[in-house]
Image (tube, rainbow, N blue to C red):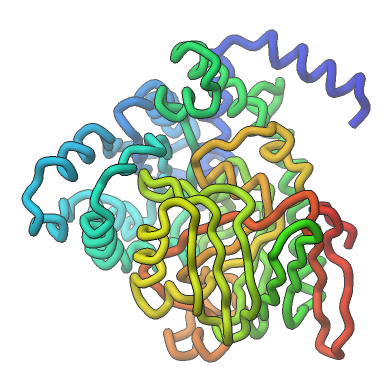
Length: 431
């Protein structure tokens, strides 16, 4: 794109009102994210919207957009940080394995009815900065265990689902500390609108073009069938070899449900990703961005793998929470995802750290502790757990992404005949 075209797009974006950009964002989430209005298979679907009460304006715009796109029934499940914080501050010590099962049952009911789920993620990154890590661990384990059947439907593309983000005053002030609270929230919104292309005259068309490029990249990498990826940071300590699952498939852009609905799970999305081999990860990896995990900031992560398993783990901040995450189950000691993202992605070029993995993982290449997506292995969605593991796929109650990419990161693909091919240099694709 020429400088003149970029200037014209910026001028056009500035001319749009906040209300129009918010509606564009909602339309993107529904039409590109869930795939409603673009597929006969999605016509008449039920939709569940999950939203914090603080993001009600966006949630209401999504509801209206979903009905206009052909949804038969749209319901909202509301969440609230203050309610959750009150529980961790005041509830009895032995109560944190108690769940509101209906919150998960709502997701399961919609999925089993052939419906779609759209989640608006907006949380205070420091919500649990002073919460007892054991309380958090107990709650997360109980929640993930009960939610596992629904998570498996997500991991196998059994339904069309989508994640988007909205600002909260607490997160906005962290990103823009020099601004007043209202100004920080407005600046946060504008950053979101730019990154997701909601400030463009035809954001859906802009997304179609972007998704086509991701499709080309994932096909190229799938055809290569590398045995492993080697990450080497020329200015850091990361030196990590990630073996890839047998008959792995790269994801990126859109996916399809079994019913034929084409959807985009994350907006924004700049990554291509696949399944590591659960027993073939070796070396040391150091995070290049903090991880905001369940209201706790974990920074300076350093992990060493041997034979696919974590053998050493530390962090400069949030170390106890990191180690409890890793100790969730056997699968959380291993990797379930490896993803490549160019440093020049719109999120990366914004220069902002969002304290939200949905955005931060699209600024840099990353790996995920925990479960692998079944569709990243050929035939994986119909495999038994044992068959999936035999191909190298990992299973766990958790799936948590954290970033290792940087402008000094090189990535090579190792071929079956022992050769090495450059994939990324200085954080950018060269393949």
